Image (cartoon, one colour):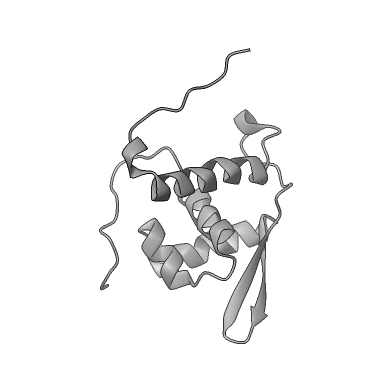
Length: 118
């Protein structure tokens, strides 16, 4: 696969499902090929993840010619009991905002943002 980065091995903090959802949130008409390249996954893996997300109501799509346009349900609550009450919108606000920050401010790479303590 030309132009596709090497896959990552080992564990990560963010799941592949969250990564795929974040890419779609950034571009609702992203091609599976582009999602796969960005997430360092195979196209088949991305197709399965999209199928999972659609089956459980997190994502839907409309076919427009040769392109799919995806719609994310931002109010859908995450599945794991430890994330009770956390919505897709709140997860994506963290992931998409971070992606935008990484793209625009490389000088801040590696810094941990301050959190307010109340």
